[in-house]
Image (cartoon, rainbow, N blue to C red; front, side, top):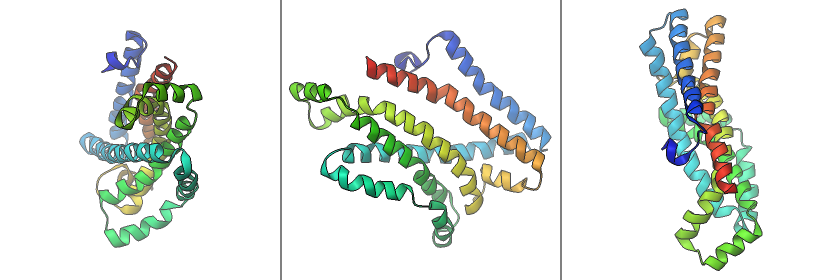
Length: 238
């Protein structure tokens, strides 16, 4: 997969970013010792939160791309985009306690509100990419006779990839922040939210926990998203 995508520039680049996986893991072992927490319990909390975030991201990326392709131009876009702009400004946390009251405390609620946090940066970033399609590219597509699914697969999908990746970086940044807060408010079992709430009275453990979370986010960005972003821009230029 790495060779096919060519998101890494050399073997040394692969080695460097691979080391970024080891650093957060070693820190988690150190953190488990400092906080006197079982390593298995800490890794379980990280894993559960990561799974919730991945599910929310998968839904958000799919939904954001479909909405962007459907509404980036024409009359539909001129009507829908202002509506979506208002929706992204809606304070979702204001509705979170109400959702918990009616639907209970579950991972479904956490994932749903994570989608609301992640989907809009992805949608608007892809929309911006599609709006920048050059006129000569559209003319070339018309001459080639591309239409329907072939038009989407061979033209819109490659063009939208840089916007998807940029929006993913921004959206997941919001998603990590929303993840901990949502888990605390909802009160679900397992996850980083419950962990931070448990140690809320210990500023040293809380500070180290925040640092560890930032280290995980930084490593994922360097390992996955920044190489993908560089690859996508090279792909479009080609």
